[in-house]
Image (tube, rainbow, N blue to C red; front, side):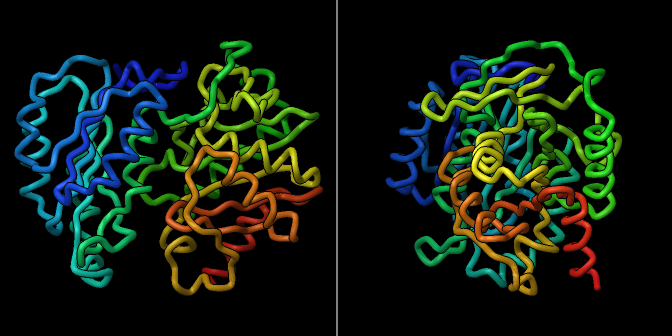
Length: 344
């Protein structure tokens, strides 16, 4: 199954193989809780050699491997993992471990080259380290558990599609202009780290929320087929009611909570610009919030609270940043202003 997200995927479509060389009990417990919540089948192991046990696994349409290693970056290890997974659909996330942050930086170019080398896979991800565990600097439990969802079914809300027809011919001109400009800025400044599908663009018009679909390429020539309309968000049911050919962004819950609680907001652009904002030590003047799961009401309320205090740029630790437009000033203008400051 190729994941195009024309429909919301069910956990019943997915098997996840989680191998953790740290054999961390807390990780396995939280992973099982998440897998059970979304009906995902989870297999666990503590050694990379156990990959061979899953060579012929075809129980479900999508099989995703998450591997946290105790060793540092090795192209030979990546090659071994990829070649040992003999599946029609290969989806792989690997986390290496280092002595400290500075050691991890030494492998930055190697990581980038390996992403290009294995770009033919439907999904290939090298997770950034963000915490210390047993004297190693590695990927955190939260990041790994979130990966169970973000590289498979993606969305955490209940998707209620009111119409599956494309809305591209119904998009007002000023809304279309916003998406075109946002796409141009996103691509021109390369405001993504892992993939040009990172983040979302959104604008409010006549009580409708227009938003990019999940897993949409946004850096150039954004397809208007990939724009959805969200009609409503029911928080009690965690349900997004929408129209469009594809499922709305996995961050739609946060966006809807921001719009519903900050009436002056007209647009939002969410990017993953690690170099310029999220992980830039020089970006100290920006307000930051602690790591919170994406796709959750909790994150939406935290963002809404900061926006209510007058902020229009917020960095989400280990995630990305949002730029908001207020009244007649769009998120595109906010983004351009802030990027210009960082360049100058």
